[in-house]
Amino acid sequence: MIKRIGLTGGIGSGKTSIAQILEAMSYPVYYSDLRAKFLSDEHPVIRQGLIALLGEESYVDGTLNRVYVSDCIFSNPDLRLKVNEIIHPIVRKDFDDWSAQQTSTLIFNEAAILFETGAYQQFDAVLLVCAPIDVRIQRVMMRDHCSKASVEQRIQSQWTDEQKRSLTDFCVENDGKQPVLKQLEKVLSELEV
Image (tube, rainbow, N blue to C red; front, side, top):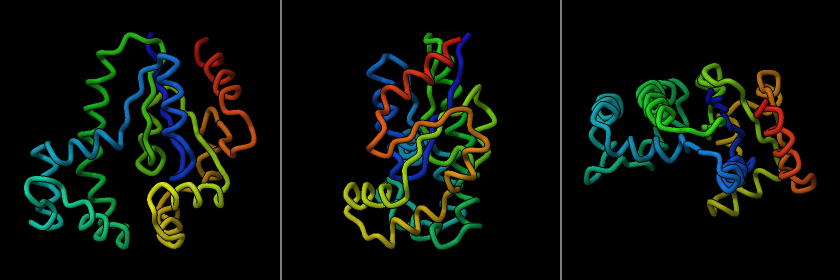
């Protein structure tokens, strides 16, 4: 039987790095954010829904106008929720289709907002990647070449680690001090049972 594991963490926590380690260990990983970007460009239902909600400016030359959509939703939680309601069911179905093709005993779904969307309930277990806020801010500023204020705004749009921990089966501390591989091996040994 295949166990489906949600892999999540706040922006800058290092969840993608953990996902890449899992892939290097031969575990299949579905990258929800990357698939959502692809599907937002390609899926007609998403395209129609976003244009109906946000207007024709949502797409430029057949591609999602990410800057425009981000500007619309980051300052408007209700609009962000409506955009998620358009995109997330299609991404979820895409993950289900992908899952059906896997043969590994453990498969992972890397997604930033598993808790915020309620999707965490659809997994056999959830692995949360945590890191201190100051570390996360520095990582995102370096990665995205953006201001501290913009990172803080993005962090505020997500649940806190404390909110997530109570709903999480496993946690890896990615603070740059504790070795993540050792923590990950312990989690995997428990999941493989």
